[in-house]
Image 1 (tube, rainbow, N blue to C red):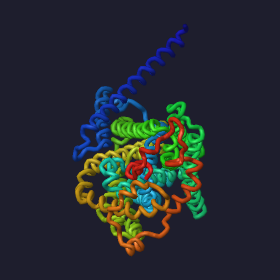
Image 2 (image 1 turned 30 degrees about the vertical axis):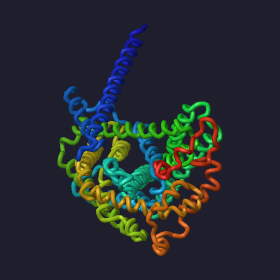
Image 3 (image 1 turned 90 degrees about the horizontal axis):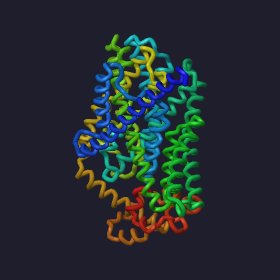
Image 4 (image 1 turned 120 degrees about the vertical axis):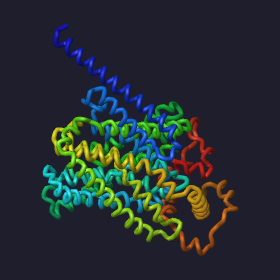
Length: 545
């Protein structure tokens, strides 16, 4: 064996050993985060994401001391790792687990907050940074950079708030925060991708129209692709009855087709976030009911597990990367500039968030007939607070725009990366630690639970005529005789005679379910789903509604 071959073998062995060491340490940290997060679950202040961030910070300090200031993390950040491997499980599980009836009941409000609100925040942050950064004499940013900052800091991270809210106790609030977070991320990433495609150094009306048209087409085609892949998976599994022979095959097919929807969207430069979300939503409505009972349990928990590990992984890395010496050595020459940039960006995030949450909630309340369905001021404050936190999407977009393969080469780029990390850390740690006390102060548990119970009883009594019209849930209807029913006048004033949900159920039962399967439309075969366990209306709402 030649000398060069021996050298290559030695280098390869050293690299492999370093990779194994890094991965081993990261797995240990993931286990530690899960255990500590479980122990602190009832803590008044801590949430799982804040726990992962703090563990990442502590680990970064240890690595920094061990390497004598050379490095603070064990893996080099790669935006592809985030967008291709870590983000899809989180978004897909969000669509798969969402209570669809509540989501679509508030779809217009969610769209207003997530899409229109993101655009408002994008404009405020872009224009605000353009004007205020000039006073700091930051001359290294161009028009595209300011627009990129608007997209980067329009991406919210409401994980901390969702960990505190309970979708059974606060269904309206949970649906708004959750739905807005998904739509917001999709909108921010779509804006970011559109900015990369267009030459925005000289904006005119033609370019603005093309930009807007491309953005709307991108969102629509992304949703259509997600629905199409979800329906395709339902049709294949319904026709082939894979579970009769192998439960593993149908579970594998569901997981792979869910991932395929995201990758096809990325292949055609669409919004993978929106695509995989709607794919998960369609799969939970059709595909999930076509598989065997054991596959249902397996897929539900598998998707939730993938999502949990991905979230913890992201916050761990952000915590370690906050101490990366490579970026901070460029900033130490002018720390005042970095502090000023971080403060301006944080202020713009606060203003941009308030500029659309309260006005759009006011507009939404004008369309809500029932006083119980209106979004109260305390709920609006909670929605505003939930979207203040910036997380992994902002970090990934900032790395994509301001670095080369995870490394910072210029002083200006280093300032923007360190400022982004500062804002992410501040909003997650400070806002995250205050989330539980704030939510408990604004939404006292007992009053909130009592009002939800009353509203849920009212909703069920109002929904009974629609369920009876579709011939469903006879047992639940029999048990609802003792429920308090509103007067005929109240029903006439508060509910339309033919709702969108009514027409959708008619269309779904007549055309969609006979073709694609779903609850009650799958022929019985050995090993096929047993519908008896899902007769209860309450049980159905876990995933169906």
